[in-house]
Length: 102
View 1: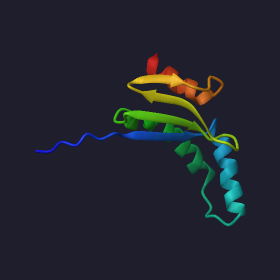
View 2 (view 1 turned 30 degrees about the horizontal axis):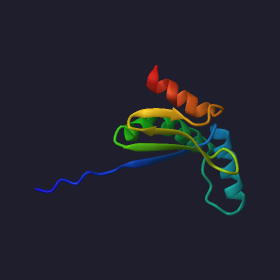
View 3 (view 1 turned 180 degrees about the vertical axis):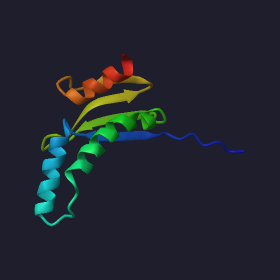
View 4 (view 1 turned 120 degrees about the vertical axis):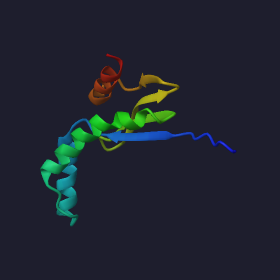
C-alpha cells in the first residue's frame, strides 16, 4: 500500500469589510457584469469568515491576504500550527487571531 502525504496550502483572500466588496461589485456591474444582490455579497462575506476555520484545520500552511487596497498583501500566516500576524494594522486578521486563541 502506498500512502501519499499531501501538503495542503490555503490562500485566504479577504477585505477589511463587505462595503469594499459591494463597491467592487457595483463597478463590475457598470462594466457589464451580471447583477448580484447586495444582500448576497453581505451574506457571503460573513459566511466566509465563519467557515474558513473548517479549511484551516486541514491545511499545512495558510496565507491570509488582504485585498482591501489596490495592492494585495499578506497579513497573516499559519505554519506548523503557529499563527503569525504580519500586518498588525489589519483589523480582520486581528479578529481572526483573537477568535483562535481566546
